[in-house]
Length: 252
Image (cartoon, rainbow, N blue to C red):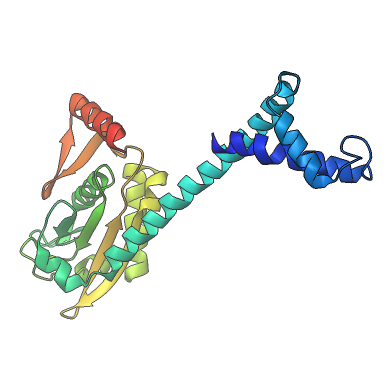
C-alpha cells in the first residue's frame, strides 16, 4: 500500500520531470519549471483522464513495495536468528548444565558408544536424531552430548575413538550425515555444533534453531513428527501434528 501511494505521489511526478529534462525542457511544462511540472502532475494524478497512468504507477510502486517488504522480513528473520545463536553461545556451559534438562535443553551421555555394552550401538545415533528433530518443531534448543542426565560430565572421547577421523571434525561430520539422512538436507542449516572442554572431557554442544517449516524424522521410510514437550521429546500422531501445526501457523 505504501509503495502504491509513493508510486503515484512521487514516482509519477519524478518521471515526468525526467522526461521534461530529456527533451530539453520542451513540451509539457515548457513554460514553467521542473518543480511546477511535478506539482502539476501531482494535482492531475487523480483526474479521470489520468487514472490509467496513475494506476500504472501505483502498480509499479506496489511491486517495489512488496519487494522491499519481502527483503525487510527476510532481514528481520536473519537478525532474529543471529540474536538467538549469540544468546545460546554466550551462555556459559557450566551454568547451562546447572539449569538441568528442560523444554530447550537435553543431555545425552554419548552419540554412538553404548557404555553398558561397551561397543558401538547405532541405535543411539537414531535417538540423537529423534531428539534433534523435536527442537525445530517447537522453539529450538540445545542438545549436549557427553553429559549424563544428572549433569555429570561423561565426555565424547569414547565416541571419538570409534570414528575413522577421531577428532571433533570427524564427530561433527558424522552427526551432520546422520541428521541429513534422518531429517533431510534442509535441516542441516538449522544445526550448529560447538565443542567445549569441561573437567578434561570434551562436550559437544548442538544448537538447533526453530524451523518455520515442519521437520520430520524418517525411520525405515516412515515420516514421524517429533516435538519437544517439557524435558522430553515425543512423537505426535497425525491428528496431534495437524493440530500443533495449525496452532503454530496462527501464532507465527
